[in-house]
Image 1: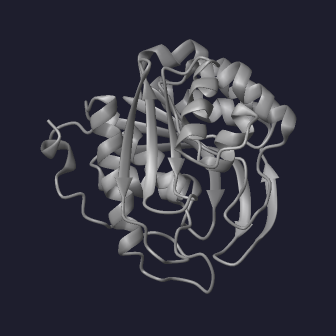
Image 2: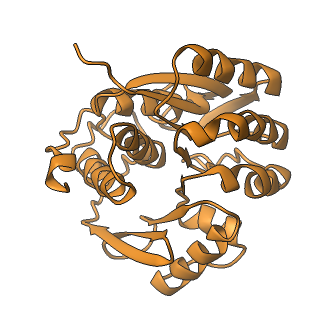
Length: 271
């Protein structure tokens, strides 16, 4: 068997399996990459509620990252929920030494699907100052883009301006995901001073738990497999669209997307 590229997720745990590192690992596997993880926080949640969040000590997070990197060098990595300014700074410190070896995708998770805050203001500032400059790509949704850019984001024009402002923090590219806006699901990629709009149908479903995690994990895996940034973003867009369309309807609230959704050979279609 050929060697599979290693992907690393640095993220929180969702015991219901729909989001967080569990969703990341499922997505890595679906894309043919070997998944590794460093746990940053533990949540007690299901499709209905989040009842507890416990943030791990920063040194425990960094020890996990180092354990993976020294033995299973990642071809790409991503971050998800980090929980505190101390964890953000610790993760950034480790990745500052190692990120040049592999692309880093930053999913700036700030709030859970159920409205539970997962990143406070000091942590947001640390994210902007320390982690975003290391990123090959940052993938905020509308609410996260508004918080990072410190402006309202309600339409494509404001998405463009928010992407520029976020880009000023230093990431090589910004993907503003407009799934919470009206109309088609529009995502906006800002890279090298240029914009690319990606649209997909919108589905009337409550089962969208873990969409951000899954999308950013799909991008990370595609980059690990050698795709260009545009190829990776397009592949992830197709994958998450199909994952939402075919969501299994699990649970009694915001259920998970379908992590078994077929990719329909997206990468080969965009060569």
